[in-house]
Length: 168
Image 1 (cartoon, rainbow, N blue to C red):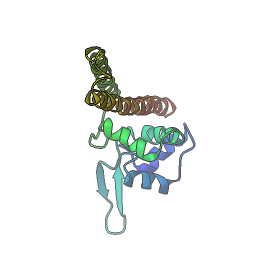
Image 2: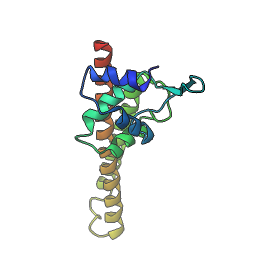
Image 3: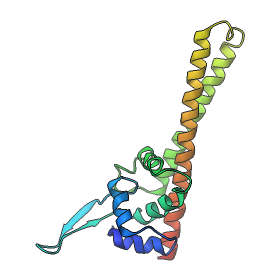
Image 4: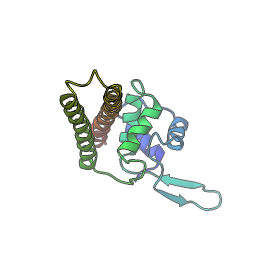
């Protein structure tokens, strides 16, 4: 476990990181993990928050991805990986979630394929069938977009975690 300041120093060895206040905003906005333990330092000492070991990697991943994705997309990727509820996760867990996402996308692709085969002759005759196909294709497009976001975030997070471990 690290404090946010310690995590920022570790991340700064790898990439230019935002100001400490920005990181605080990211924690509040759930762009990066929140503290998992708080320690009271007495009446005038304040409270220190301790963050999961992956926090430096999350900072680096978010900083790299924010040029491509919005902060709300990065938050969505964390939710899809369940990083918003898990205190500590291993890279194998992240890779497993990515594999499951790919499987869901593939099954939707297969469903559309079977649908096209089933209604190949009749598709032009029934508006309902066209509507159903359109709906399935939209669902697939959304799943594909989520999977791409998830894959990019997971790849960056794993890469960043390895870089932090190598540099520290």
